[in-house]
Length: 105
Image (cartoon, rainbow, N blue to C red; front, top):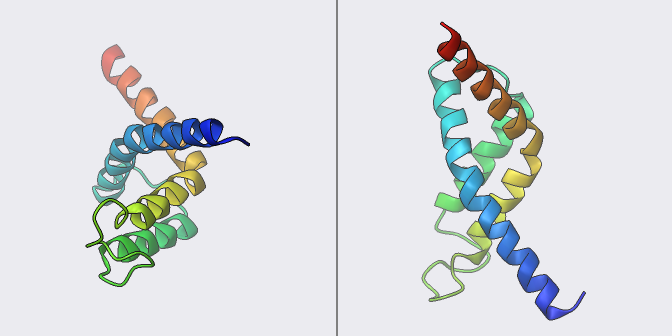
């Protein structure tokens, strides 16, 4: 894979992170409020581990390094979103189904 293809793939992943992060926040709010119970224990453990890593001051690449300090945190979030792809897709369908029911009511 040449350098331009890797760069494009990285841009695609960043775009996916930006589009999936709000969905993840909505999923967590719905789960916390008891409206959505489609999360497995494995998914919740992955979320907790990723959150602990991102918030931890101990990183592979220290956060205070300008320009590259947050790369490992972004990579952890991308891995989390990739591993949760099925959960996010199921939640997206659940949201669409609920909004469809609200319109019909």
